[in-house]
Amino acid sequence: MRGYTRWVPRSKSKLGDWHEYATERLREAGYHKGGGRERVVGLLAGKSCAVSALEIDAELNGVGRATVYRALDQLEQLGLIRRIELGLDSTGFEKVGPQGHHHHHIVCSNCGKVIPFEDQPLEKAIRAIAKRSGVSLESHDVTLRGTCTGCD
Ligand SMILES: [Zn+2]
Ligand SMILES: [Zn+2]
Image (cartoon, rainbow, N blue to C red):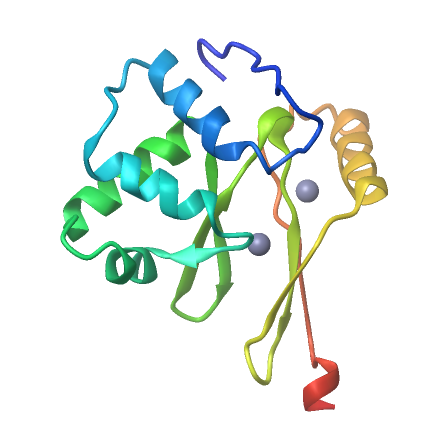
């Protein structure tokens, strides 16, 4: 990533400090504090999983859709959030922590329920696959689809 300064988290929690981490990264990138972007960051900080741009827009009454979309683009470019395709017409945005910390999802094809999961051996396997394929890994998507226990 261009001009990337590795950020050292103050506590051991990986996504718990995302708000502070994102604020610092935005400051380093030359963005001024305040306004709609700060409210988008504040809202995302409180979410544990993906939210759509429409949900963000609805929750941040008064910020304006254009501002929300621009803020999401900026955060995505800085690698602070990622875009997740969870189904038909459902693009979500969620936090990416220091050192690229993130989770993946299981989506029920019947009710649309989204179950987040983290798996370090899976992350390790993905990095190993990229390495032996000679690919410099930028990102990856893993989504499991099936029927959840409630829909069985
Ligand atoms: Zn998620
Ligand atoms: Zn992963």
